[in-house]
View 1 (cartoon, one colour):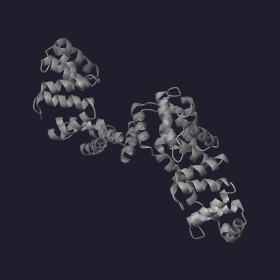
View 2 (cartoon, one colour):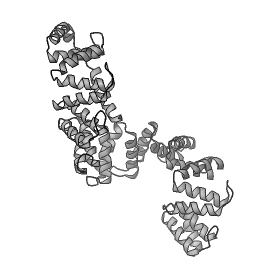
View 3 (tube, helix red, strand yellow):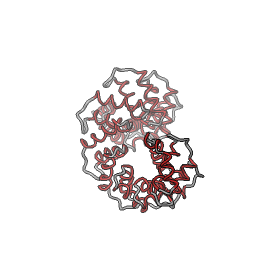
View 4 (cartoon, helix red, strand yellow):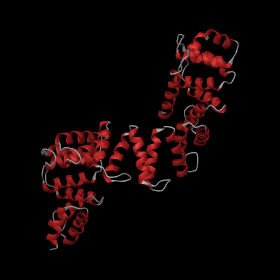
Length: 411
């Protein structure tokens, strides 16, 4: 429903931007005379004039009257706008089935917007029974006439295999055409496809090109991704300043991962002047939107007093939120609170359960804490071999505490 409404608003905007020229205003009476004589084009144009209200008093019912007369002579423009009127309830009682009927009539006469509208109706089952094959048929008709939105939708069908045989190469082909016609989301599709090698060979330079186009167009997710590309030097030269620039742009648009990354930058002083207040402010914004990395960062920082003033209760609040989301770092942290009794009543059994949940997901903190539990023999039977196994896993992920304990166990 959302998709067809977006298209509907676009088409209505075209109608609202219709202006009677000065010459047309001068000849309005002549146009009305021609319409009353039965001239289909004049009837359609007169309907547009009444719908828009430029030069005459706006009157939707008069617009509908003239469009119906024009449509009775099979004028595709009138048929299309009658469909729009019935879909939106403009001058008539809203009727999605009637709207689809008029879209289909316009589409059959090669109206490219009519083709797009009936395709979307079939795709979503609005006014007609849902039928992906019919949707694909009409999207292709509109796409072949250069309608960017239809090209994007047809590519989406090829990507999912709805109404057509799944074909990622075909999806890419249509998305490129759509992107060149200004359909912004297809730039995102192409960036991701080249990054992941889906439908095309992996090409990080090409991915970064599409990321840049989407980011320049204001897509906050691609701004964040472009920041990572500059941070990691993938597809573009490594550039910390540009990484910060794009994360900041994304963060200012409310993109949670961008908020988390700019917050981390402020926390560490990476590419920007260190500012703990700014760090916490941005990371909290991300956490409040459910960004798991931000949630676990806040839990860790408040609980241990690193990056924020220590507040065990606040730390545990965020740690529990992370556990609810299945975050393995938060599981390890809550397990540590149970194990040490730091802010909670000591409970080795709960701690070991949480450590295992975390470690089994490859989390380095879960591996460290589980290895330490086996080393001490709390909540589990003391086992140097099992301890070394888990500590080695954590050490392989760069945890210095794990490396030091391993040297102690195996001097």
